[in-house]
Image (cartoon, rainbow, N blue to C red; front, side, top):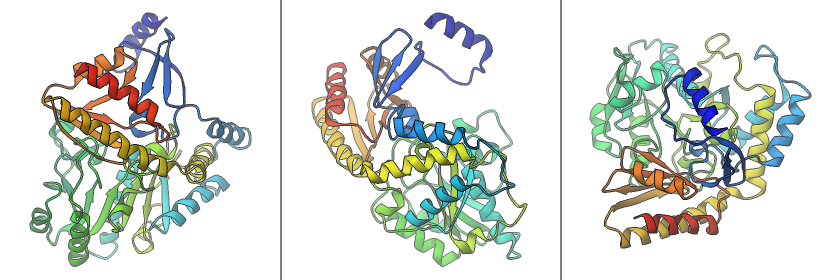
Length: 392
């Protein structure tokens, strides 16, 4: 069966992904199974998406229940699940208003548009440039890849959109030198995910906030990967005590369903008026009902607390590996967003882990990224550590 599925896929699906020769058929909790019946402990979690693990029964129940009531009517009308989800996010964050979409890239598109619209509405049409960080990742639409600080993401798409400037991440002096009268916003990830799991210095975000306040530029936090508990707080900005003007979410918000959100403070959000931005599928009843259930479970079952504890335990174990193996260059991260940088290429280790029943991910060529479900336990972490110790 596996080979037949792969052959068919190679004929009919666009060749944008380099996939290993396995076909995932089902999942439960922190494990998935392929069509051959082999199980894998999943430390990728759909790329930091399945925070509650796979096939969570309560999320499935909420999804099915809403599907039997109302599936879709578009954003021409109010719907109860969308309003309730927005209310929950506003209550738990700095924000006053929410715009729903389908993905992280769309959420970042909305943030970029809102920042420009905000100053345009003030009659400052020349204030449209956005400063982003080197090695950042904000999406693959034309605007968000233009805002991404990695040349490999932009390769083949020239000319990219004008209006984006780049400075080194975690360098407040470079940011201060880069901001000018044409800067409308600064966009950054509180922890760079695709860029190699890079954490800033403890006071960096405070310095960025002060620079934005001094110059009047808006501060956008891209929490598509760091948000919804991934770093040991509901939102990563809460570690620093710094609030952005705009924040974007996706990934774990729907635990696998396509949902994104852009959150903003009232004085900024008010720049979006009727007809200034829209989406057909953003915030449909089915998706928002399921996302609301995800958030309720995270709250009720203290999933973020588990993330914080298991993240600290995981880091301790990975540092133990570093002390034993010269091929481990660095271990860094926050919560359960962890990177282990190697002195060798990472792909062979990914393949060896997969052969032994573990799914892990390699970014930037030599950094293993671990983003397991937030419900992961010590036993699962220990199993991976033993596997990595043997391979290394």
